[in-house]
Image 1: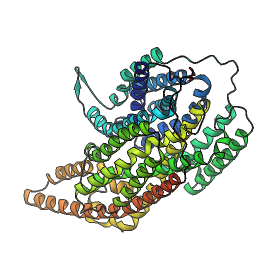
Image 2: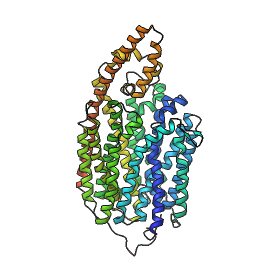
Image 3: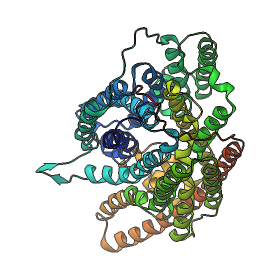
Length: 562
């Protein structure tokens, strides 16, 4: 432990760590507004899924392994490696000459992101006693909330050819922006973070790490964009999507069983099976997984709701989430301060999870006729609950373990939350697709779709029979582009005919938008119902916890490792 450090040193270390974590969280959202320009420049629309999935894949795999390595080699050393990898991956990703290089550097960047994520929360436990951790965990939670708003805004700004210091920005700047901040964070951590004591004998569980990587990697590929990612393989072999997924799930099961059996025998396991004998640990990681799924369901699909129903651009839809993020940041910071003062956390977790659950239930009332003020109030209330719930999860897990196990325990929480988000997104996506298809009917026969189906703007979006393509066609930017193309075609007709054709086209477009918007809204209600159920179950787990007192720093605490 490093409770003996001066407050100045602790603050500098934490600011450096939070800056690194901010970049990692930012990178998950800033890329969303740049994807269109990336695939357009490289003419690689079929690789869009890989640009996102490569980063997610390596980040998820790295988190638990990095947590264990930090317990062995110290937080400082592992974190410096993580920041270095992330900065280098960002630089080379921004310089990528083709989409293959970009995907590879995104995967490399994700390794650094996983290392940073695993260590950022753990370092709080190294620098502060349990009683003091609440306020800092709250600040880290606020960093995540802030990045989710700034990401889309900054991504849209940089992608839109801005002039900065005589240079014209483009999508590559969404990667380059990480470099100077990352270098500064690296330097501060290297200077101010204490060095780790030398380890004489190191036993690294390489076999366990390999099995865990296979388990997590194949699981993510089996649930996230499987059809798009393996389209070439399925075409070449004739294998069906169902058969492919069954094979992948068999590999996941085999790797999972092998990992559990191995971890019970090795001396330095990546994830000790003894952890699962602790009732509180099991309850907390289960709550973290369900919370991750529900949180992702609300954030991801609220932005789509804003775009489909209110006609917001991606940047505007991000701004419309400000009530949610505002509520989250307020209680994330405030609850941390109060928890540190009174030394209790369970009651705050209970209140936070209950409020978040009520907010999820309230989201089911949204429909195409709902005013934005209704959505804003619901989001703010839900954000207040989530702002309490997120930081206290990490605090509670850290409070269950000794200092030497802090890295593994904390990274386990991040892993299960990440898995919950990934699996939740896949499940919600399937629910949304099934719901939209059932409500749309034969929309391909509508005059608007028949008119635009052969246009070049539509052909590059994908299969017109796919629900995602239909939703994309209802995006404001796409409708504007299609309308512009139609107006150019009408301009070749005689004026009276062109005017009539344009009027009819806009009328058909409005009819199409109404059908899609209502179908989307009806389907989204199902997602919010599922998310509310997941939050309610996770709330039940929180109420079953047995609270352990948060300890204050003691005069006998001696320097440990970082």
